[in-house]
Image (tube, rainbow, N blue to C red):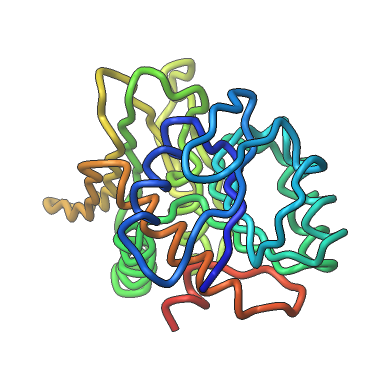
Length: 250
């Protein structure tokens, strides 16, 4: 039985995680962390330092501002952590990478297996299509999302660049320029509106043909299921290092 500490326990995704775990018999939430300490089937604390329960893994769906304390707790207790929060800046990403040298860290920009498959398909497309196609990424999310472009869009762009030998530039603000598109850029476009859970399109535009790879999330539950699966997977991985969806799938 995998014992989970849930950071962001009473947030929107925390509630979905609770629902997913309640339907499984191989894991349980033993403690939570949230500014709102309302408890249900487990105690909820305002900070990790207050937790007295023993656990096998941490799932974080909280806020980037809590990253440092999360990583310190994980390293101090040698408890694997599944980081599912988004919106980290470059310095925080470096903190995550450094922390993985001290404790097991599972980090991906998107917990959906489908999105990770999309990244692999995009890499395959690049290897087949070569330099003959321009690449644009369009992502759509709900009107409450703060960061843009999404971490997932950046993850997809990074995956694509692994298959391109020349350096590529990410173009976020093409409307401010009056010049032709270059071959060394990937356009990233963010749309915000309504209650869109998450949609990502990768457009390969060539001469007289267009290929589009798409993924559409219909509910937040797919991210919760992925995070819980990652937690169960990480509970058996005590060796320090950076883990991703790739290791879990394999």
